[in-house]
Length: 115
Image (tube, rainbow, N blue to C red; front, side):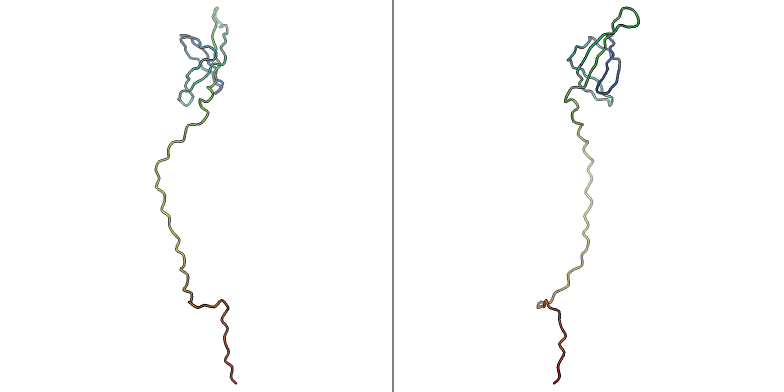
């Protein structure tokens, strides 16, 4: 097993992982996200640095999330069934009965004239 430091550009994090072989540039990896889900990552760069001890070269990976992997957030969970509240009607006053032969002009008192 080869221990490789993986620098994640998407989450700006670094972690050491063990691989059976060093991935090449352009290959894809499946890494666990901080929220526990798995996602695809592309290897952007691979380089080696000499270790502080002996004549050993340590590999490093620079990765970024694959385009379209997490383009859209997951759909929201279905809300629990909630019955709609009943609709109450506000009572309205009933219109008063209109006389059948009504006049639009105001009624005037007719003064009886005596002659």
